[in-house]
Length: 354
Image (tube, rainbow, N blue to C red; front, side, top):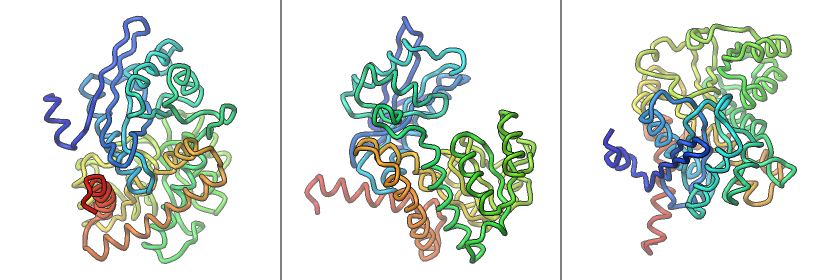
């Protein structure tokens, strides 16, 4: 990989490679854009097959955070951290503290938080070394688990899509495939089940699937068949890249609306989904509840306020759907344009052009 060429493609500002021999830390921190404010984004710990895979992931996720922050109206930029390793085997206090020291060395350009493979408790360890950390527990003034706030955001974004496609707000008439039963997916399943939705669920952790089938009367499905279930809505809440050119023709759902980051293998798939009359809720918008929860921590956490702000994702999606229709573009392109317009306005303001 030609690293500087990769950075130039999406205009990343900075990538830091972090290595600590004592703890075994191998990490990367990407700062995509700080026009609107300091870069914020979680730190993902994952056993990447290669360093190139880790770099690709941190670049994609940091860019997505820029657009997520811009789209939901917060004054923050986009960043991301990744740690190469198995969180179930390799995670230690000294490794997390080493990562915290590297975050601190960026002097506030990047604010870290939890992500896949890291937890609220991990962030409290990172906090020993830096104040530039969010996603903390209620005990230390943080917001705790962001899952419920993220789930509320996905619910209201999904509601906007249902209104657009089915012309009603009745989830009891809808069937929904939920891929991934983590904190977000499970909270969302709980809410949708309460409204009478027919749920199909899958997760790599069998015990979570069993719990969901018992609690929500959901139907368990094979992870390899998530796209082929005859359901109204496909809700990806696990890893990204779930929609690709190889499997797009297998999709049976009329709506794709979920919390996973980077759901599309590439942005051109947004146009292909539109051609197939499949309504796609841009992931960086519908999944912004976690960011909203973290921003509330930075302002002094109030969960009621965070939940109310997350419900505003409904209005964001309505605006995107209207723009897509009026300009005859995909929902992804509409969301990208809205985010880009906000960043461009901020850049012009800083340069004295407004």
